[in-house]
Length: 260
Image 1 (cartoon, one colour):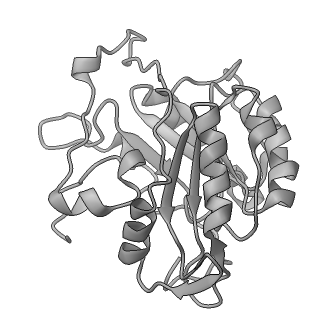
Image 2 (image 1 turned 180 degrees about the vertical axis):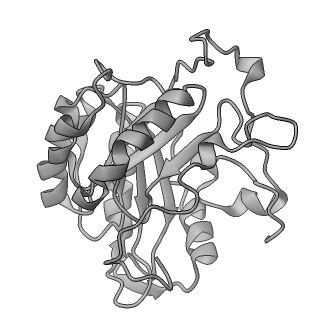
C-alpha cells in the first residue's frame, strides 16, 4: 500500500465495516453488495491467524453480502476454514493470484481441489504469459481478472498475453476483465509508458478484450436463512466517468464519496 510499510501486519480500522449500521438501524453495506477483502494483503497470512475466525464470523453473519477473497497461499486454506464450512459459504468468491504460468500451475490445482462454491483467478500483476485453458475446461472457474503492474520498477505487460487469456475465457464462456495495462504495456513490438491508473484502466477497456461470460449466481440469504429476492438486492449505480473504467464490469458501483 502507498505510504504504508508492507511488512506491518495489523487489523485495519474497517475490520467491522460489514456490521456497521446507519442512523436508521440498517446496515451500511446493503444486501447484494460485494466486499473485496485484503486486496493489498492476503486473507491467509500466518500473521493474521488470530483474527481470521472473527472474520469468518462476520462473513457468516452477513450471508446477504458477497465477499471476494484473494490469496497467494492456497496451501494454507484447508486447515483454516471454519468448522461449519462443509462445501462452502455461498456468499464467498475465492480467488488465487497467478502472475505468471509458474504461479498459475502452482496455485490453481490447489484452488480446484478446495471446497468453495465460487472460484476465480486474478492475474495481477500480470508479468508473464499464462494459459489457463486446462483449468477453465474444468468448469470450476467463474471469472478471470487481469491487470498490469504499477509503481516503481514495474515490469511489462504484453498485449498478446492478455489476448490469449481473453480468447480462452471466451471459449469457455467465463467472464474476463482486463482492468489495467500497468505502467509499461507492449503491443506489436512497441513499448508504451502509460502513466496513472485512470489512463491505464481506460486503455485496457479500449482494447476490447474484456468479455462478460455466464452469470455468477450467488444464493444470498437473510439472517434467518431465507432467500433474498433479486428485487431486494443492491443494484450498483455508476457515473459518466465510470464508462471509461476497465473495472466497471466487476465494480461494486459508485459509493458517492465525492472524490471524483
